Structures are given as structure tokens and as C-alpha cells.
Image 1 (cartoon, rainbow, N blue to C red):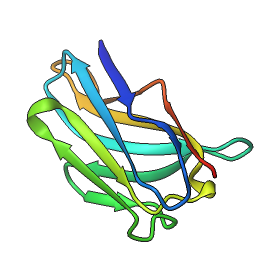
Image 2: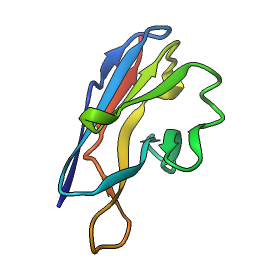
Image 3: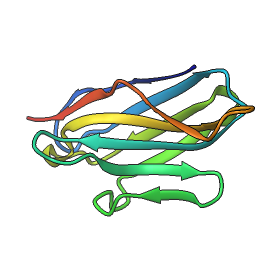
Image 4: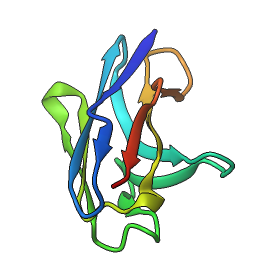
Length: 120
């Protein structure tokens, strides 16, 4: 089994910054994908930022240079640094991890999500 745990959400004011972390643990051979998605009330889940072993880093169009995704390979951790937050960034942020396990097909796993609220 693979566990994915996010942390770092909270309440911030417009213009402030917030950092999220996501750790993957369990039995796997390698991590091939780590991504952040978000889901706001009444909206579909959308990509925020991702890293893929083959294609590199990608950001959602709305990020516009405000967010940065980074990884610590040794810790199986992906980070999302969010700057210049605005109320439209309010959502539950989910981490998705894709792993390769010996003898098993490529699989992806979701974390439980962490709430980010931007409000004055």
C-alpha cells in the first residue's frame, strides 16, 4: 500500500503566502509523478502544479508565476509554495502521487486533502 499525506493548509489573508507539503510512504520502487490539484466548491478538480519524471514540471494557467512546486527526492516529498494568494485560491488542495511497484502496474494515489482559505 501507498499512503499520501498532505499538510500545511490554513487560513491566510489576500496577498499572503502559504506552503504545502505532501509525503508519500509505503512500498514502491519509484515515484514517477507528484502533483497538486485543487477543488473549490461547485468546481471541478483542477491541476495546480505537477512534476513528472519524463515531462518535468507543469503549472495550471491560473498560477501565473505565483506558485512553485519542488521535490525532495530523498524524503519522497513534494512541496507547493504559494505566494500572492487571493480569495479565488480558496479550495481543498489534494496531492496525487504516481508510483511504480515491482510486479504491479503503475498506480496513482490521492491524499485526503488540506483546506486552504484565503479571506480577509
